[in-house]
Image (cartoon, rainbow, N blue to C red; front, side):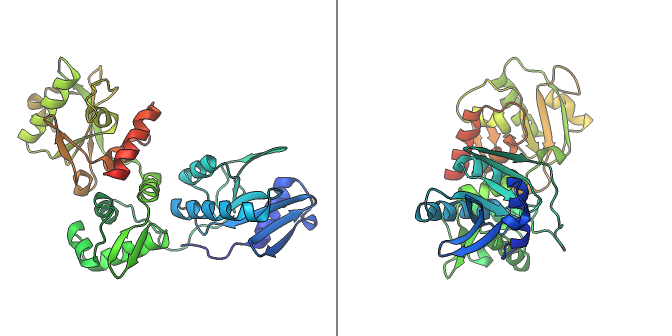
Length: 340
C-alpha cells in the first residue's frame, strides 16, 4: 500500500549517513516548494514517492523537475521512496536525478558527490496481501486496457472482456488506481499512461518461472522452422503464439533471430514429437516452448506470414530477461506495444 507521509526522521538519518556528517548537523525545512534537507552548505530538495511503483516514481520525477527551477540551481534534487524498483531506477537514471530509499539504497551522481548503495532490504516488510495487479489472472484487466488504450471501459464491460466477475474486476482496478496506473471517471476506466503501465507490468514479469521445454526441430531455414511449427501446433490442437526476439524480428520481415520461442497452452507430449519433428533436449537447440499460466497471454495475437504471433504487449514483456537483446529490438517492440 502507498505510504502517504514520508518518514522524516529516517530521511534525516539517511542523509546524514550519505553525506558522512553528524545527525545533529542535518535539519529539515518545509518551504513553499516542499521539503528541503540542509546540512552545512548543502541543500537537498526532496520529493517523496509513496511507493517505488513505476507511476509513483514517474510522477515524483515530474514534480521534482517542476520544483528545481523555482527553488534554484543551488539545490540538490533527490527522490525519496520506500523501496526503489528496477524500472524506477531506470527512470531516475534517464532523468539524471539522484534517489534514496528507506532501506538506504541510493544512487547519487553529482559534481563532487558519488554515492552508490545497493542490495539493502526494506526495513519494514509490507503487512497483508501484496498489491499485485499483474498476477496471471489479475493481469487480464491490464491486458484488456492495453489492447485498447484510448478506450474508457465501464466496469461491467471490463469484467466481460476479461472473463472475470465484477467484484474481482473492482479489486484489481482499485489496485491499479492506488498505483496511479488508471483513471476512473464518469466515462469509465482507462489507462493513465500506456508506457508507465507497461513498464510497471514488466517490472513484475518473470518468464523463467513458467514450465518450458527446449530442443531441436528439423528445418532447413528459420522461415521453414517458424511456419511449419506454427502449422503443426495448430494441427495437433495446441494454441500458441510466437514471442520474444524471434517475434519482434519476424514482424519486421527479418529471419536473423538467435532463438525461437513459442508460447503454448500445453507443452508438446511425446506423441506430438513426430508431427512437430521435435527432438526434446537435442542439440543444437533451436526452439523453446513455454507453457502459459493464463489463456490471456495469447489474447490479441495475429497471423504474420502464416505464423501465429503474440500481441506486441506480450512480446515486449517476454523480452525481459532474455540474453543479449539488442537495444534497437527492445526499443522498437516497446514502441509497438505502447502504440498498438
